[in-house]
Amino acid sequence: LEDIVDAGVTLIRRDGFTEVTMKAVAAELGVTPMAIYYYVSDKDELLRLASDRIIKETPPLAMGPEGWKISLERYLLRLWEDTVDYPGLGAYLINTPTLGITREKRTKAEAFFEEAGFSASTAKMAWSLAYSYVLGRITIDARLDGGGAEIRRRSGLSSRDLLTFGVNTLIEGLEEILIAESAVAPEPVRRSSP
Amino acid sequence: LEDIVDAGVTLIRRDGFTEVTMKAVAAELGVTPMAIYYYVSDKDELLRLASDRIIKETPPLAMGPEGWKISLERYLLRLWEDTVDYPGLGAYLINTPTLGITREKRTKAEAFFEEAGFSASTAKMAWSLAYSYVLGRITIDARLDGGGAEIRRRSGLSSRDLLTFGVNTLIEGLEEILIAESAVAPEPVRRSSP
DNA sequence: ACCTGAACACCGTTCAAGT
DNA sequence: ACCTGAACACCGTTCAAGT
Image (cartoon, rainbow over all chains, first blue to last red; front, top):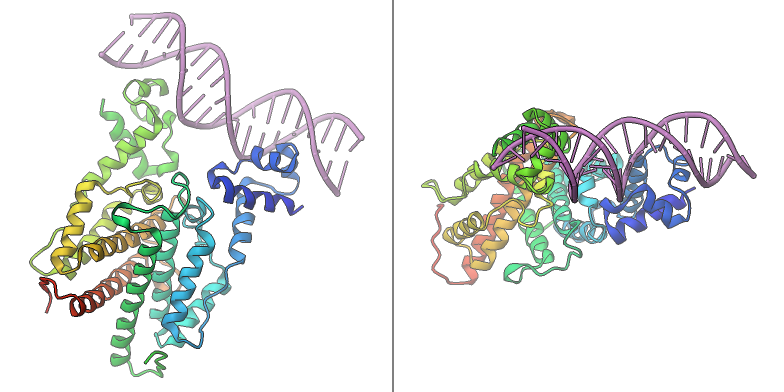
């Protein structure tokens, strides 16, 4: 039964990852904790299924007509928005071998950077940089204790402000790398921003 | 007794954060788990004391004679090196309200960016970006399961390669922001790199 | 096929009691 | 002042048993 996964997702969103207990999930479904073990072998498996479900919703990184900079910015902000409402999800994903990214999505993302003009090896590092930064921010902003992500911090900087600043300067930095790389290596490079 | 904190630090380094249990700490000291409660009120307090001890070792961000870019790079790499050998430390700090940075260190860090020429508000965001990126990488690289940080990944990119790439493009991005800001706002700006 | 109840191991923690 | 033992609440999980 896949109602269990639904219950897991609901619980994560409402009470956070740490509150997802076999007892709580069972209570959500009106059964006994042991009933869950018939469908799922483990609590780990339950969490994996639930987080997979949440992440499956987020679209992959793809090149849009506006060029790689805007496409990347949109993707990263969207990724944050789609996950920041699940307290503890970031902390969970960051401790996972794949960091919550399927092979397919990673391949697409790396292809994106190559299409933008980066060399194969730089594309991998660029993707790793962009993703791990946002995942870090998701982990910070979707904390288990603090509640929502919309907390204003000291000096009036919201999580969103910090994120957009970070994403933008990160993209600026990547463009510098791209320029430096194009100057050195005369590969077939298509610059998609003027 | 502060032997308890030592035992905690030792256990974190050796077995990781999740293995730090009252029983394990007690066994390390040759006492009963309850003995610890005489010196410490809580497991949380023990973990706080232990992580504080680890972090106290790392120096603050300070301007060196080589300019802000090199100083920042050195600091961030050093921060990573000093913490990456403690499995689960990043995951713990990232869930902490202060992210493992004391008020004093944060103030110094923000002053560093102002000294580099950033406006007060941009300095805060720049610091947040740099620190949260590295903290994210620490969390990823100092995982609880995977063991050491020196694992070669797919395509021959080590954690270190990813980190240095990330830190460098991040600094490049920050320099772009600094240039753009200096052009717009005619503040008393001292550029410390040519 | 689908669910339950009793039982176990392992946490953190309290409290009364020992020296 | 410093430590212990028994006991409790709360986890995840196993297993034999019920329908």
